[in-house]
Image 1 (cartoon, one colour):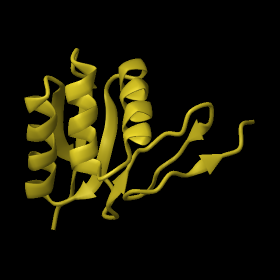
Image 2 (cartoon, rainbow, N blue to C red; image 1 turned 90 degrees about the horizontal axis):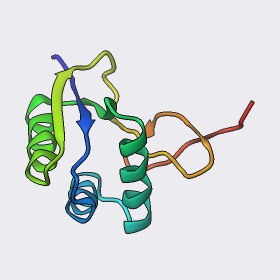
Image 3 (cartoon, rainbow, N blue to C red; image 1 turned 135 degrees about the vertical axis):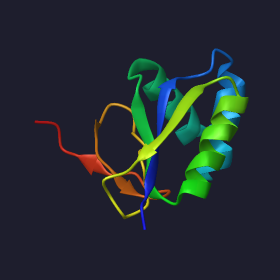
Amino acid sequence: MAKFQVNVQSPSEDRTAFVKALRTVGDISLKRAAELAVYLERYRNSTLVAGVDQRVAVHIAKTLTTSGAVAAVAESKTDTPMMCCPQAAQAFKWGHLRTIGKVGLR
């Protein structure tokens, strides 16, 4: 069964609505959602979630699009559900849904 990912091509100009949408789809705290919004503004065309079913990916993309963001669904290369949740001033890596992973800066 194919898995899908959601790519955020451009965040919403209304940051409040975008942060609310991120909190809704990721079930994350306000602080993490705000950090993620800043990250997605800086690094456009980023993958937000990967390894999810098509129905879930379409729902996430629709929720983000409703907030004013530009999001697209694409086929994923991974089968494990993941969400990109960067932490400020750290290198970023993929973690399982609702987790943040740190990588030492090199």
